[in-house]
Every structure is written in C-alpha cells, then in structure tokens.
Image (cartoon, rainbow, N blue to C red):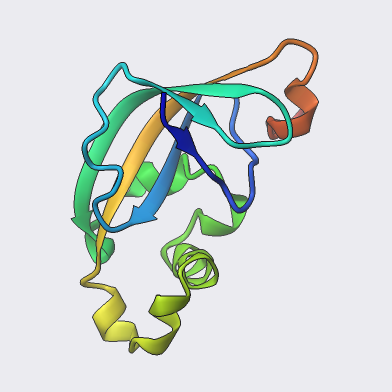
Length: 124
C-alpha cells in the first residue's frame, strides 16, 4: 500500500482532492487504497486520477481540495510553491504549464479520531 504525505493533513468528510506536481501519482488506479499520512490512522480510496496542466485543473477539483488554502487557483499556486521549492524559481506563466496529477479520494478515519483530521462542515 502506498503512503501519501500531506503538508497539511486536513480533509473534508468524504471526497477530497490533492494536487501533486508531476506524474508520480498518475499510476494510481480507481479503487486503490492508499495510506494518508496524518496525525492519526487514515486511509483513502482513490476515486479519480486526472493528469493535466496546472492551468487546466477543473473547478470541481479546487472545490474539494483537501487544504482550505488551495481551494482557489491563486491559493493552490501558493500552496504548491510552498510544497515544491523548485516552483519558486519559475515565472508565473511557466508554472501554469506544469504537469500535475489530481488525485480524488474518499477518506476513512480511525474511529474516535475524526476531529483530528476532518474539517467541520458549515453549520456544525
């Protein structure tokens, strides 16, 4: 089982997306189970894998981005620059053409530890 690290392990209950620079995660298969690196034991079941240019990321990916700071295009650019230092040296126009892999996954958390990683939905 592959283990996916997160700079900020905060997740929506249910469906989440993460955007990864490059193609390292592009070989994941829908239905594959991955271990999510966080403050408690979490698993994710892969629901979608999309490889595209950064500027072509669909809105539905941004809306379910696990990191609240990355739920807009400009916010995601900032998160990616913090996560991948090699992007800091590139000009804005260059970064738009970087290949990324968007991984959709459904989160399962060890019982009793949900508050450690699951983001509260509005109104709760």
